[in-house]
Image 1 (cartoon, one colour):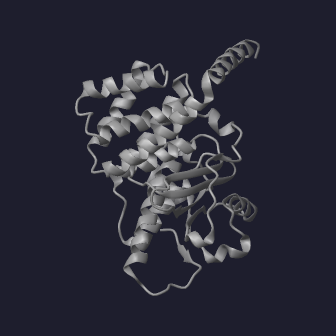
Image 2: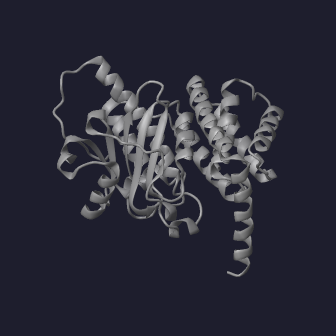
Image 3: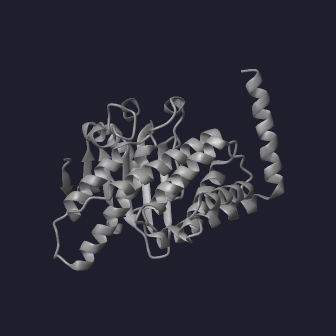
Length: 327
């Protein structure tokens, strides 16, 4: 097990504080499941440039009482870089609750889900999470994570019933991210004495992997695909996807809504994911609220682009295609 370091002296025990800690660890556990699966698909992805800031403009301060999980194989310089992305001053580092996760632990927990070569030999990805105010929703920022998007993280968090949290995930350079899930499981066990339901972890991983595969195979904007998944989950939360026919009709409806062409193979992936989620004891009210909020936000962004932006994007794709002919 990894070692949890406490920089602050524990104060007077109280039920409210313990409850908030348990909620925090649940949030981190769900989120780290999302971060972990970002390392799964595609060789070319490892060579791509990292994104030095994607998603929401999340700011987390010490007063937010956050939890921090660091890859154990970060060098001093790499750790300093990651902390900079998170807005953590080196002088204040010992004031944080920190979990260190080893690559050995990554393989112990993840080999059943992720090919060994994708997990790699160094634990590098890191995350900081804090609770947000009720009704504030999920806000996610990523730095040097070049496969999963903020939207993919949000959808996975919604699967775990998380609604209000601020999250920053970072790597010292362009990486996928594997260490966070293990760190969260360690923290959950030691702080609450409970383990996250393995079926829920598996479902969160499945959702991230499926969404990533869809974004690779479907010719469409990643946010449209994420919105489609969010809408389908919202329909599930309403109890309206009881039969395979209803699932297929929902896929058709939302594919049309977001102008996406779904192949038979991709359709089956979505059906399989829905069938798995239906068997779990999830907080469907929470999923409905967050999935609806995320889908509405994306739809507002799509609508605000206007017709001109869509035409511009169409011609950009044509230009990219012609360029590919000469490369």
